Length: 59
Image (cartoon, rainbow, N blue to C red):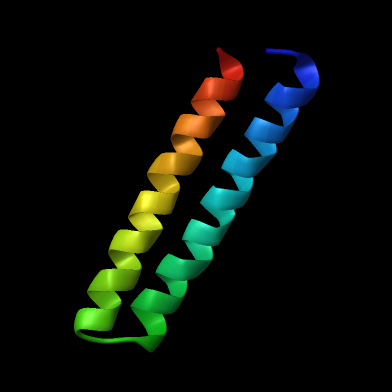
């Protein structure tokens, strides 16, 4: 994989982690019940995908 592709994969990973932080903050402060659970699980999924893409860009 060339350097430009690694850069874009890394930026996507960083972006997904940032979106995850915003979603979890909104879920914890503004919502309750089932919606809070759904948003928390979505944020966790985004965090994992962002981590994997960041790790993939290193290798």
